[in-house]
Amino acid sequence: MHSWGSPRMECREPSIVLDNVAVSYGGDPVLVVDHLELRGPALVQVLGPNGAGKTTLIRTILGLIKPLRGRVTVCGRDVTGNPAAAGRLTGYVPQLARTLTHFPVTSWELIEFEYLLRIGKKPRLLASAEDKTMVEAVLRQVGLGRETWSKPISKMSGGQRQRTLIARALVHDPPILLMDEPFSAVDPQGRCELARLIAKLAKDKLIVVTSHDPMLLIDYTDYIVLVNKRIVAHGKPSEVLRVEILRKVYGEAAIPVARHIHISDSHILI
Ligand SMILES: Nc1ncnc2c1ncn2[C@@H]1O[C@H](COP(=O)(O)OP(=O)(O)OP(=O)(O)O)[C@@H](O)[C@H]1O
Image 1 (tube, protein in one colour):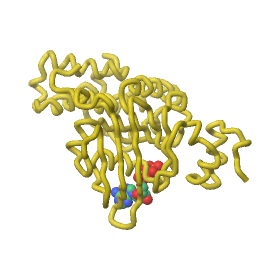
Image 2 (cartoon, helix red, strand yellow; image 1 turned 90 degrees about the vertical axis):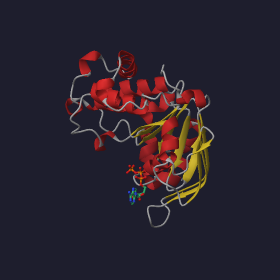
Image 3 (cartoon, helix red, strand yellow; image 1 turned 180 degrees about the horizontal axis):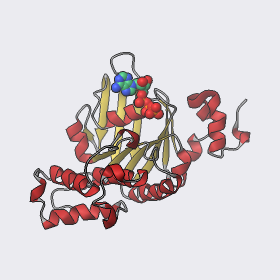
């Protein structure tokens, strides 16, 4: 798809491995991971209550946080505390609620800027016809049609804005995509469409999604990681989404959580 060396050529089997990692923001560790290994293509959901360390896990994989100890590898490369190395192989979709609400540009401008930056061409006036074709392909890949390209991002719907953020994360065709609560500012119809887009992307990428609502992606999910300051459980949804395991993460709230995701009461341990 791209004319310069695609990171996907460097990483045919996407993987993320954390070993003996502890992360702190200055005080006690907020996240400890003895060993976590994710391999793709696959769709992985990271679940846990507020403050469990989901965003911290994503930011550690992205090299944006240098852990107190331990090693993070992406596609076999050590990216610990190294955002440039991690950024070549990953795309990041941050939480929408915190992003782009007042951004005075259109989706086309944002994606063109990101694309030119990635290929090392900074002034946007130098975008060639080939560059424009690439920008158009990425926008279409996430389902943004021509009618949206000149719309200011601040005037877009939550779903369109989320697609714009996904397009920005895809411009360098990374083998791994990390998404922080992608459904948080999207209405119910937009959520279903977004879930289908994420499922499609997961066919040839390793996609890691943090969420408070596992049902939205459950039909497409290969693995669940349950976090509460440490990795409490990980495995296939049928192995992990059990009340006795959810209780370790959500406490008494495990029962409403389990009902929400349709786990039968017969699994509840009294
Ligand atoms: N920049 C920061 N400085 C200090 N502490 C932080 C910072 N960011 C997060 N924390 C703390 O680290 C812990 C984990 O936060 P994190 O944002 O990773 O949780 P989360 O699972 O993503 O939560 P939520 O579901 O609410 O988004 C929390 O106790 C939080 O207060």
